[in-house]
Image (cartoon, rainbow over all chains, first blue to last red; front, side, top):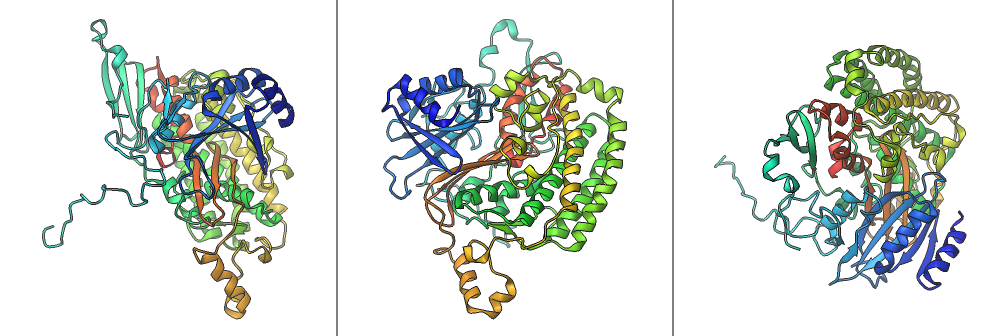
Length: 167
Length: 407
């Protein structure tokens, strides 16, 4: 289904002002509010044939030029029969960093959502096992946020310094 | 959100299941090959539940991607899947060039195709060879590693670096290849089918090998799609998808090659798919090296995307300014302020980068879609109900590279 037809189809179902679209190179994006995300993705999966969640990731727009929202999430869906892709984007703001988990639609979302939680602190509602995946469990910050410094915060300050004479 | 303890055993901790016991597999275990840990719940020797625990090799690559410029970060992506580093470089610069709208020269496209396919052979040789090694077939492993040594030699001839070539640059390659490279690739194309045949004869009908692989870790087609698996994993389960065919990039439209698929979805099918893919890759390399276009390897210098030739930097003021502008952190490239997702068919599956650009030469966000990470999430579904000795067979067929898994 071409992108325009897909969008018209979705507009009929969800209302004409429910989402906006944008394109860049061959990326076709649908921007939608976080509350509507889950039913929207469900429609895309069940009625439009996007059967694979190819990629899920997030970004912190804190220092992005002209950005008004803090966090962005993207869901890249793939139709494995026709090879079409569509990117669904949504924006989140503090303090409510909660969004519905898509684990019920695609099991592949499990670890990808855990990684986004680990790196940005976005909480996925009804995720079966939302805990840190790459960082240690006792870690308290969210390292890919833009207000987290590249060299870390506090991790290195407590390292014991061994001088040559002592060793 | 407060931190919680890992909930690995919660549903099983009741009295009538006290016979279950827990086994830690890894993080340092010869059969995991890299540092990853599995918490296995066992009933006798049968696995009831497997919980992977990863992150031992996490080193903040994506954070570094937000600090290093497009050409510097290539040295980091190299270290993600260090079995086929050049495929990562090609993926990274494929996305950056997509972001900036650069069309590569035909010679560069062919060279990147050749290198990418050599990387695929290198990766598949390690995967099949190490899988054989874990199951007790030592000879095939040695044959595979002999050819990998030849491949490393080829990468060294091209880039000057054996293991982490860092060979691609925005808009081209670090430098053109020599005649020696062409000769070595031709030799490899001539010699490799013999090794491949030897490996096939050693393994394909080897009863121990086949019985430990066949019917183990079956991934159905529906599960493969649902769990986001791609590449040889998905193709072995009957998902007919190859990004080289479906979303062609580089010089792949010029070549005739088959997409190798199987339907069984077990470890043996994944092994066979990898073995056949090597021959298809060899075919592509053969056609590409014989039809290598002449001409420049980098895009036009006027585009200000590539470094000028070294001698002209010394001799002309324009080239010197141009070079200077590309290395100064406040000048560099000026990509559009937008975001783009691009992917290639890496040996392991779909390797993608999602780059958010704020108009500078450094990515604002460089998200990797790592195939190992996605495929390791499949592991608990594959291993349940099998014996403990099947863990190594399934792990070997997934080809998990921990550096890419944890980044």
